[in-house]
Image (cartoon, rainbow, N blue to C red; front, top):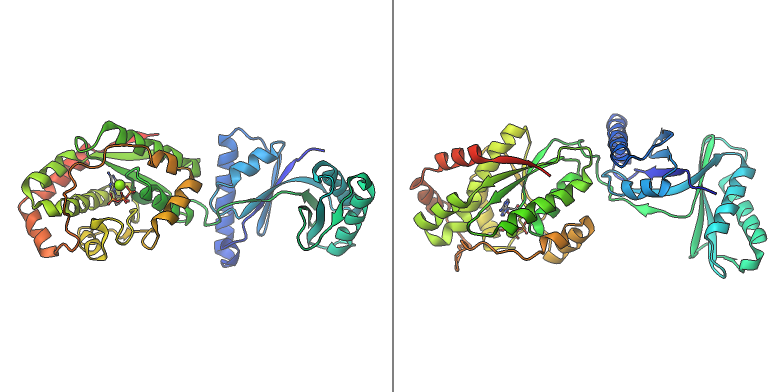
Length: 391
Ligand code: ATP
Ligand code: MG
């Protein structure tokens, strides 16, 4: 017996959208899924789309299922065996799958989910399949446990087809990538910002990362790390552009260190990042800027300082998906996404960070410090020197 299908579920939040939005999201999800199948060279015979589900007929059912757990909008997937909805055939496939899966002495349950008109009920399937599994696997000493089974033989009957499976892999839900406009993400390569990027992606925003290279205030490895993190992150957006902007920022930082009050260095540096991000957002036709800031995570991220930072962005909103996250929560997500290992590689920290950074910077003082500099020219020069790297 060979698995020849994958059940893709996308109930979640897509399911509660109005009809028009749901159809749009479902079509986009289908498009994103096709891109992934193409990328991995997985051939498929057909994809049946029904409300809340897709059924993909493919010889690579397990590989497809695994890849689709990384598609935003997918709630869960199951590699399955397709049959007609004819009861005898469904029961026979359920028995075959049970033979393949159920271990000696284990407990099991048969569950059935049915949509459409059929001559039998879901309960008929459960009873008959359960009976025949017990009869044909007598020597395995199985027992039925409907409450807490070790194995579940599941049957999904959908109109003229049925699918039998035992395994369900969880997806990450959210909305299909591309259902929202693009966002520019300030990506440092540290633990936080890739998670912030991912959370925006999960809600449907394709992202264009923007990395500020602060050499000579850090080492070359920091840039390599940011590019590697980006590559990892893009495993979640297959079929979408894979470019990152790299902006040399060391000269700007040097100016702040040499010419402005030392305790304002980080605030001035970040405000500059926001200004440059706005320019890239314009070029990229993005709708917002994402950062990995969380309240109080660093001196520059007190609620007070976040207000001072925000004031530098005049055209685009700065979104902070991690605002209320504890570090451990962020780390847990980073591990799930796959970026944690890269983000925790040892690199030189920023050597321009002052010993006593302002935690309560005053906007007037920050602006006074900026008036002493040619901020506009600094932004222009940085934008001119920005390079696009495709990873
Ligand atoms: P992260 O773990 O993301 O590096 P962090 O906790 O170290 O964040 P900061 O260094 O204060 O905190 O940075 C706050 C946010 O500013 C980052 O999450 C990121 O969005 C942005 N940022 C900081 N440094 C850079 C950089 N070199 N390039 C691009 N964005 C940056
Ligand atoms: Mg950092």
